[in-house]
Image 1: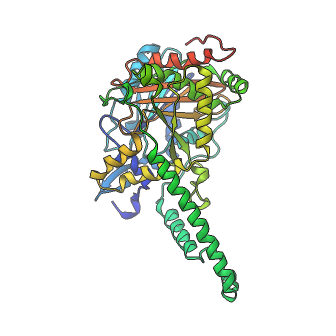
Image 2: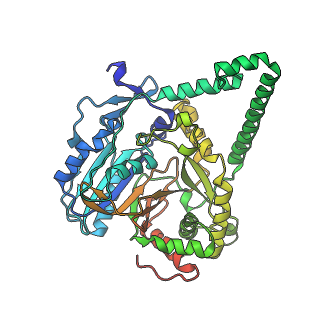
Image 3: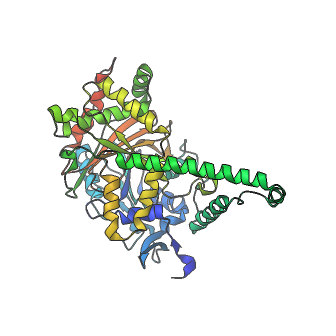
Length: 471
């Protein structure tokens, strides 16, 4: 393999390979309900549009303790698409999807695969599993936004991305920052000449720069200290050792206006309402009661996109793949006695974390996973992931219905992996004016994910003006 054909992986991508474990694969799962999608349509769509992202022809390979991207020398699309002709009912479909979640992807090929079940009850089902090292949820959502048009007659206009070495922007940015610290990196030659004639101005500018660096450094230290000082979750039924067998379920769609009206009536955001639903469902599953419940602490790890927080020279190009998100650890008020109490306490926590540097800190810490010796990796992972009992991801979709290969997408669902010993993942997906909850859980921590979903939706009826929801 020539050097030109291989590319070093960015730490933020290879981190997900370092965090991989047999009981908890770091794989994102996407499921769509698509009216009338056939095998020939899908095969043509994948070969023309999906494969326009060159990274999908590459596989991660570890050489001399370093992860690299290398092209699959025998790549063939047929290795990455299975067609299942079973006539799945809703219950058998859920079991089948759960089985795919527990199925390993072969390490000798690019780590992604599609399944199509065209005969499923209620419409064709398209399932994708892709390893997190390829992209985060925002990147994948961006791909589908580009490839899934607003009309069945409309073809994607802009799509695809070259796969090139990604280290150069980071090296260049590090050089620029270093020059800035030395006091002359951002000045032009003319400005430098003027400053040399006025040493007082040069010293004043350097002093202001170091004052800003000191201020930012102090804030970073404070934020990092607050992160480390955040108490770990109370021991509960959600903190059991994982068994490695996972089950997933998803709810029926609920109109987005239902959440919007509650948010407007209570002066909170829709995200606050969604997290309140999760807190209500978690509460009875902690296995804690009485005084212990009143003092219980439980955090949800919530992924946050950090693309807008990166410097301009480090922001990824539109349509490119990669991992650019951090994590905030949101305390869930599991001791709250009423829906309104839970809702307003969540509002306080989300406002407090809104301007936090915690997502950037978490992104940096997770990126270190592949750079440190394996013996030290587990302690770092424990510091990071022991502070949460669940992962809650919020995936915003398009407000209008979309079409893939000319076929209408009626539902979308995402499931993200849970790193460390976290065994519960809750996904909230909004699409085409509707919201769905999804759950993936290790059987050691949650025996019946369907009941968890029912409790999520039941919380909506507890707010003023709430009405029953058909699940």
